[in-house]
Amino acid sequence: MADTQAKGLDWLLEPVTEDTPCGPDLEIEGADRFIDYYYEAEARMPERYFTPGMAGVAGSIDRLFDPKSINLRTETQAITALLRETRDLRLLSLLARFQVLAARPAEFADSLQAMAALLEKWPDGVHPTTAGSVSERRAALDELGSIKTVGMPLQYLPLAGQTDATYRRYLVATGQVPARPDEEGVERGAIVSALAQPSNEKQVERLHGDLGRAATALNAIVQVCASGGTTRFHPTVDETLQTLTGMQQLLQEARPNLSLWSDQVSPPIEMDGDGAEAPSADAGPSMQAASAPVVPVQAAGAISDRAGVRQALEGAERFLARNEPSSPALLLVTQARLLIGRPLIEALETLLPADAGRAVIGFTPESGFAVAMERMKKLSDSALGGFEDSAQPDDAPPAQPLVLTSRSEVAAQLRAVEEFYAAKEPASPIPILLARARGLMDKGFQAIVAELLPKPEAKG
Figure 1 (cartoon, rainbow, N blue to C red):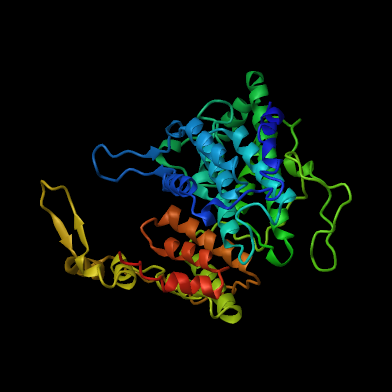
Figure 2 (cartoon, rainbow, N blue to C red):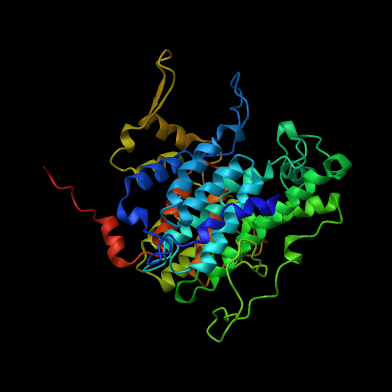
């Protein structure tokens, strides 16, 4: 079934026209049909997959994203219509996220396979191209590593058609993530037993295959990007790869006859003297193509505390200061570091100096309550514990400086910090600063000037 579904996107490997196989870049052309749909669809992506209820507020409950809220048929039709005109990774990345949010792993794998095949067939032609900068392509592919729109949906995906058998619950049962109140008492044995039931055999095997296809395709995407000559980069998708692999390992635990995706891939890609992929006489793009497992470039891993945040940002700042001192990303990373552990008031005054004084915490109109900026400052100064990180014990060894050697490694660390704040301190502006920094890292001087000094709109 999975293979049949994959063939449904084979038409993407046919050229749009003989002269322009990938068609035009509809964004560069300013096509309203692309711009209106794409950016509106991106804005509809959930800000978080799990929203905790407010403690002490009656009627406030935890909320989990509902896969049924995605109208996948409508989104697929809109994206497919655009893909008939252009071969664009941004559209396929968007489609893949809609599919996994809708709990459709087979279709998710299909889209990743299509992306890998397009990159292999037209590495320089598929949009957005890397001519001048890899930032647009990197941004489209980095979204496949998003925890809130890819990682969390995978974790909560029912593994045997039952919501009590998920990878998330397995992580809780094995102590890899802390349990929420409704997850207390989850047992590993019960999850594995449910997956091992004979009645679930076909469903588990089908899901195992879909997860393997997705992981293999995502790995192939990284391989192609990492061997792109002067434009090579490493998409920040390591956490998604780890999640897909972990899910397959869980299914393998229940059914030992199943094998992991990484056991079925081809031998490592041979590299020439310049570090580029050596050509193969019979190599060709395929929706089913398999590449050797990628060794992550300075895999960021999960950051668990502010000390890890500081180490990551200092490493990124050090690399940029030494190697790219003219990059505006350096300024944003420095500002992010200075806001570690700082209160809301300071963030507002730093980032919104002209408007901070008008900030007010409002309540319901009936109450008439309001906490104005001056009062917020006093409350901020009086907050228990202060805002500085606790000092290390005298006998604690100094933190080992993080040495980064490329923009790809910097981007991976910034992404890890963003995910830490998304999970631990969503009110912090640090993720916004770092996301902007990542977007600026690969831009040239003229593009930066155009953003920093936008031309005034013509009157009349």
